[in-house]
Image (cartoon, rainbow, N blue to C red; front, side):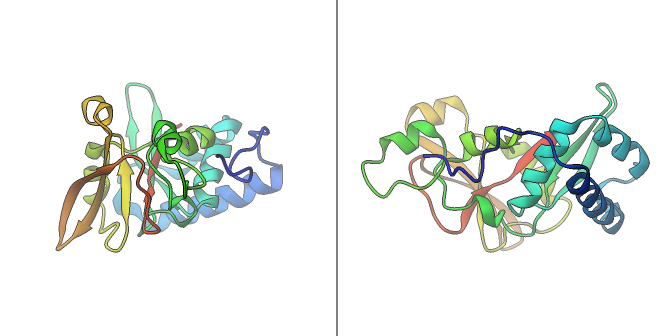
Length: 193
């Protein structure tokens, strides 16, 4: 079920990989100042450098096309919040059904993976509908694709799952059977560091 390239037992980057990822994240941070007004890169970097596993998770987000960026700071926990900020649903995370139960329910033509397990293997969580709407305030995302979002238990219990996209300058929430998967639907994640 799980693509072996997606999961690694080693959840730590080499010094070279860490340096390259930090350069990429810093450049994105500086390019998109509207996403994190009042935050300083030096403080974000210090947090990242002291947490190898979270840096590994950010690298997984980057590697699968998510283009993670800081979207906020939780003052109570002193954590920086990263969302996948790629214009479209991350390419390396598309064509997945919602969760393992949905994957197992398919008798044939199973997708390679599912959004919930894939996110967990990356050390991240998928966005909730509320977080997805927050992201859409920062720009126009998923104008050609869609992204699974965390589905309320009552909907999931009945076999459904929800996803979002942006069309006609409006964010829409839709439903599908959780076992469905499409080449233009992936998922966006978040990480607290």
